[in-house]
Amino acid sequence: MNPVTVTLAQRRAALKLQCAAQREQLAHAVAEIQEQLQGVDRVIGIVRGFRLSPAMVAGAAAVVLGIGSTRAVRLVGRGWLVFNTIQRIWRMFRRSREPE
Image (tube, rainbow, N blue to C red; front, side):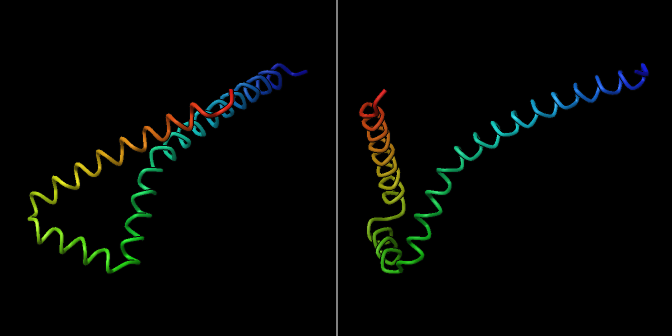
């Protein structure tokens, strides 16, 4: 074989390996981004639920107006803390019940 052809074939093989490695890295990066965006998807689902239920939005507005904005923010913060705690406990419970 011609030395130029051999060199080009070797370079092409190296580039194919490099492309495969980059595709794998990209797939891992996309998977990480999707995992991080799952929380955003949940929030969007909650917002859509509120959008579909004007009574809930009106009720939340009444609560904010009734107890004041500072107390409402504190209440939401505590609710978020409780929600995250319950979610973590639920995940641990599910993991402990999974067969190994």
